[in-house]
Image (cartoon, rainbow, N blue to C red):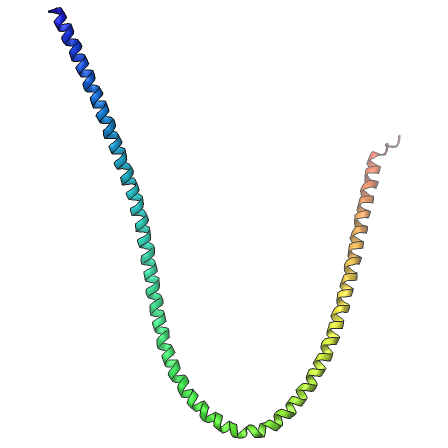
Length: 179
C-alpha cells in the first residue's frame, strides 16, 4: 500500500504541475489580451482627447465666423446707406459739374498763366536741386575727410597708449635706486 500512496502522490503532483502549467499558459494569454485591450483603450482615449480639442477649436472658429458674419452684415447695411447717400451726392455733383463746365473757358486762360509760372518755378527747382546735389557732394567729401582724420587720431591715440604702457612697464621693471 505504501507504493500505491507514493504513486498516487506522484500522480497527484504531476497533475497539479500540469494544472499549474495550463493555468500559467492561460493567464499569459489573458494578460496579452488585457494588454491589447489596455493599449486599445489608451489609443482611443488619446483619439477622444484629440477630437475634443478639435471640437473646441472648431467651436471657437464657428463663434469667430459668426461674429465676423455679423460684422460683415453690419458693414453691408452701412455700405448700402452710404451708396444711397453717394448716389444723391453724385446727382448734386452732376448739376454742379454742368454749372462749372460753363466757367471752364474763363479758367483756361488763368490756367495757362499759372502753367507758365509753374514752368518757371520748375526750372528754378531744377537749378536749386543741382545746387543741393553739389552741396551734398561737398558734405560727403567733408565727412570722408573728417572720418579719415578721426581714424588717424584713433591710430595716434592707440600708439600713444601703447607708448605709455611701455613706459609704465619700463618704470616697473627698472631697478630700484639704492638708498
